[in-house]
Image (cartoon, rainbow, N blue to C red):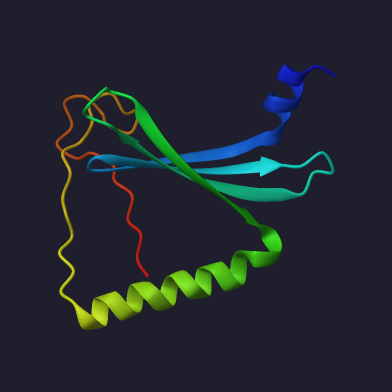
Length: 112
């Protein structure tokens, strides 16, 4: 099996979230033994040269609960100790989730 076939096989599901100047990619991938794991990638365009800077973490299924618990705890801490203002971003007309002529664009709604 070639490298291309391995790459195609390991990507199972992907979700892209645009948030202002950053884009987050949540990708479900499979190991050779078909165990799923998540990669979370932050992508941000550098204005000086137009290059995209990416940061990636790998999250394995045995760590899902602890990771989610830790994320929930820090989000709750910030919400209880500081005003959190939800930013509204303009819809990206290139996204498949935006229906032309529609006044409503789909948006991701994450609550903690």
